[in-house]
Length: 283
Image 1 (cartoon, rainbow, N blue to C red):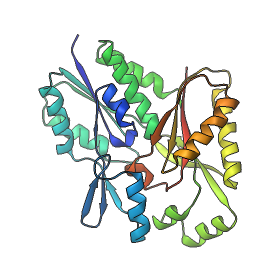
Image 2 (image 1 turned 60 degrees about the vertical axis):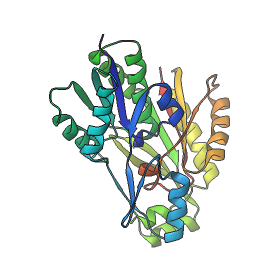
Image 3 (image 1 turned 45 degrees about the horizontal axis):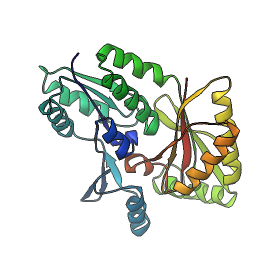
C-alpha cells in the first residue's frame, strides 16, 4: 500500500506532542498586528496573543496559510518518501485555508493529493485529522481514510463558554454598549459548532451556570452512547479546563483521559481569553 502523509493547519488545535506522535504536519495560520506578522505555534501562542492584545488595546487580523505554505508542506512530505497526501483543512465557512490548499495542489497536478474541507474547527477538526492519521498508519488507502474521516465527523460534539464579551466587542462582533450591559448582568454565552462555524447557542447568567449548562449539554449529546474520545479546549485557562473535566468525569462516568488543547491564536482571537469547553467523540 502507498505511504500516505496527513497534513492539516494549526486551527486543528492539535497539541504538538500528538501531532508528532502521528507524523501530522500542521501548516500555520498567521496573526498580524499591523506590519508585524506572527506564526501560530511558532512565534505566537494564546498567552502571547492576549498579552499583545491587552497591551495594544486592539485585536490583530488573522490570515490563512498561503498556497505557497501548503506547497512547501506537500513538497516536504513527498521528499520524505510519502507517496500520497491527505490534507484536512479548517472549515471553509470561516477561512480561506481550504482554497489555499486546493490552489497548492493544482500546482503539482502529477502528485496524488486529496484536500478535505473538515467543515469543523479546533479539536473537532483535530479528531478528524487524528482519525485520518490512525487509518493511514494501518496501511489503508485513500478511500478508507476519507470514509473514516466522514464517519467521525458525524459523531463530534462541540460546546464552550465565554467568560467575557470584552474581545467580541473589541472585534466589532457586538457593540461596546451591548457588551458592557451583558458584563453588568454577568451574561455568559454558550457556543457550539454548527455547519462549519462556531455559533452562539444560548446565553446564561454567571459562569457557574454556564459550566452547569455545559455539563447538561454533555449529558444530552452522549445519552445512550459510549464516549470514544474527549478533548478539553481552552484559551489561557488550563485550570478551568481541568476543573470542568473533573465535573464531566463524574457526570459522564468517564474512564478515559482527555486531551487538553489550546484553542490556538487563529481561533482564540475570535473568542477571547478564558474560554473553556469540550469536544466529545461518541462511538
